[in-house]
Image (cartoon, rainbow, N blue to C red):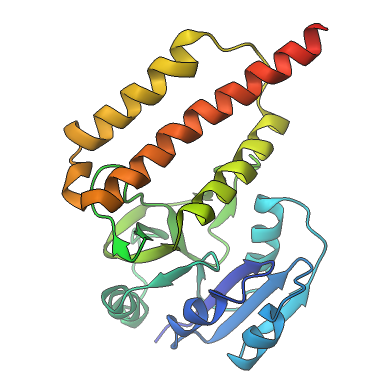
Length: 250
């Protein structure tokens, strides 16, 4: 059987880190790279058997790449602290590890990620995405972009049939993430002044498309709120850029 390493980055993740680490009980190596937690994250991670490395924050891609670079296993799985594998994904990864390596086989796998919002897993609309999270050690690296970073695999990539759950418990949790993501994007996206379409039309178009054309209504009120929050994120981001353009013109 091939070996698996689990890499996770953290800062103040005491509410989620144990659930994340416990969802990969067959990992041969577990590394948590922490950037200054002031809660019980480190204590909990060590209790779960992780090797914790404390390191100053250099940005998402560099921190995640550093965590991956600590691995000595055949395969590397990267999870965020608020993510966990489903039972089906655990079984599927075990099956991948059991297979002998063959020429031309996948060097990486995409794993569908389903949000769990207000206690409900969202399966439609703006619900799942499928980032690359499992790869052969040494066959991929993180891209250099500072937001929406991803793993670039040097070889074939397949998609797992099972997935993982992304915990986002409350509306406040989601709003805090919107704020953080917008601040990050403002640092790296060229500044300009958005017009009426980007400020007002695009958020409405997004909501209607994901709710009705892509079936978000099937996730009930939780799905409608989740989709509305993404539409709000579009408006909030463009409003912040408009605000910045006003400051620059004065």
